[in-house]
Length: 498
Image 1 (cartoon, rainbow, N blue to C red):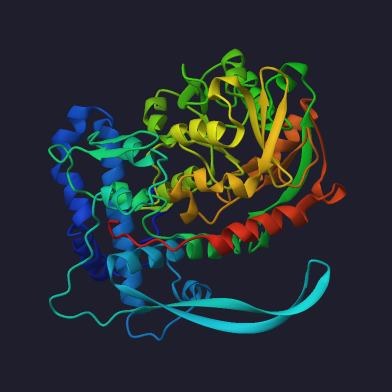
Image 2: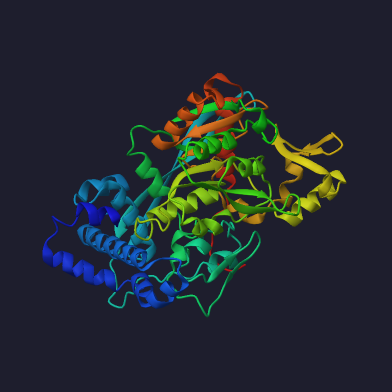
């Protein structure tokens, strides 16, 4: 890991223990696959030779750290993550937590889940009722390994797509060292003749193995954060609207995302933004790299058709700092890439993550079908789509506004969206959506110090008008309720081909 190289976290480790752990680390299949494919990787030119060795060194350091953590926990009873970090003294708490999760995926550690049921009184439709609530407790223990044990091998990410749970974020495509993966809004293809079977794509995929327990435990270490079981860790919640007429003309709700991005570009805090715009086919969206405010305005408004935005992140390497706008699965993908396999992100220039609220999205063909089936309209007649107060709303070129109950359009949503538990982009620096705020305003959740500082700077610049979400109705209670519904209805992921 970069931190290990800089701060020498191995300084207190006995030389013999360090040597044995390092020897074990270089036997790791991912490390070996990456090293053995050096010529192919450098030929593709996605990573320079310097970057190649930086990534390789970070992978070896991280794997060495994991081996040392493993040795220290051998023979101990099942422990909570909070208990484990008190035992392991050599490494930062955040490192230890993510090490345990990765060791579980490698097959060295088992997770013991205890479920406790308690009865609580809740107000349901104005009436107090006693209901059962489940609490989950996660403990981890090193396995007694058989002599013939082999570390788990990570399959290429096609296993996720074949299981029907791929979110089409495109992150695997950007990270693949040999450009073997091609992702579109509907497909994922891997060239087996090029693929080096390193499993990096699987490691960083938001739908492969879960990081929820790790990130939850890490965030709870940060005392500046409030924590909600439904909307994750956050600093503050707001309701806000843009003050600029130019943005009001292209906005969906409060115009906050565009306002924030304009501030970043104009003040040269970022050199470019990864966002989404309409393609030549109206309502068929495509990822785009934006360098100026004029092009930024073309990305305004909510995009209901999915687009593999992260598939172009590798094209941003020439920029020193970028911002990425995306839905929850994309924010989670970036976070996972920062945690694994080494703690070294492959794209170090991602400075800000702006997350969007997302209940579900649609494929382009299903949006066409929805417009025809539910509204008897051609897709080209639509100027705007929106979800508000339980209604799916469309606006037409004629000026007419039509709506149907939201439940009537949910069958048109992508099935793979039903495997997502996150409504409010838990892993972003700033999350933005319409739920909880009045028309023409957006709900904003700041989740990191960088996000909070940026939001306040945009207010100070006069680009947005803001108030606490506590001051508006329906406010945060509605956000929490809808987020809770999405978490409750989330389907478990089973990586078996359908």
